[in-house]
Amino acid sequence: MEETIKGIVIRSTDYGEKDKIVDVFSPTGMVTFSAKGVRGASAKLKSLTALLTYGEFTLRQGRGKKVLSGGEVVENFFPCWTDPKRYSCAMICLETVEKLFKREEETKDEFVMLLKALGEITYGENALAACDWFVVRCAERTGCEYQSIAEFDPDTYQLISAIADGTEKGVVGATEGDLFSALRSIALCLNGEFGVRLRSLREAERIFFGF
Image (cartoon, rainbow, N blue to C red; front, side):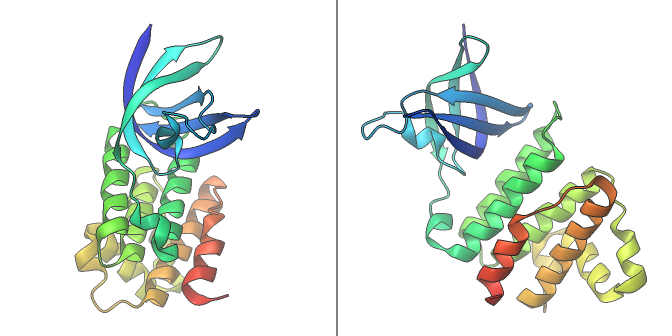
């Protein structure tokens, strides 16, 4: 029996000689499946297993796990692959989803948010602002009490509150340094409350600021 799901590839791991294990974030949670032979030079389904791919995935039940049998790429967010800043912002969003919603079964709203954020990161004017918006909204949905930031950094808290209302309103006059400080503060709250550490932040900081 086969099923077709829509989702975004958030992790794609080499397995064996030519296979991959793929994690897809969908409106009904995380779905993991194997993709056989997709690392071969002429593999027809290779494009469906690339990181950041938004597509329709047709899966069949194998021995104890789901196996990719077909599908169609809807969007590959290609400009992210050619722009280090956009790519680093996209990776932060994927890691946030993986670590905050890995065990959730109803993630329709989060899925729509991720699609919106990736679209803004890829084609918008301010990738970092879109990344901030997504991480802040995810933190809110998990119940993260980031209001404590106001006690030691009221300016950053004010920026975070504005970002939560929408990317355009939130970034008027904000520099990349301001936006990254807001992102770092939310990440610290997630780490403190849930033990979630966003490791992709370090690479993004290097790309944006050179250290």
